[in-house]
Image (cartoon, rainbow, N blue to C red; front, side, top):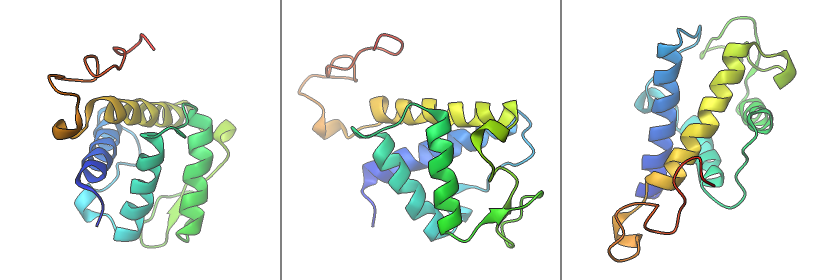
Length: 144
């Protein structure tokens, strides 16, 4: 069972990315978090755990490569059309071959991971009297 903090961060990033796909009218809108298969959610939690830790990546290109490896490991292959049952995905291509919308999606993912890292935490673990990351020693956004 994942930690409550990791689960909350994972769901926040996943659902935020899903909402961004809806808002940008992306051709692929992910299913709700609760509708995803447990193997997918488990690998996603691992990515979020890394992205909220010291080994995080700020490069959308690097994260796209990691995403591709994770999908290949789950049995997905490139396909011109997204199909969860057949496990085909049109974004299983090198980052340089992605369109602008897909590159933007990767950048949004990086930003959401950073938000989760800084502002989704366990209150009982925050320094006494701290109300947020700024008071807990974190710099405000854009000032790191």
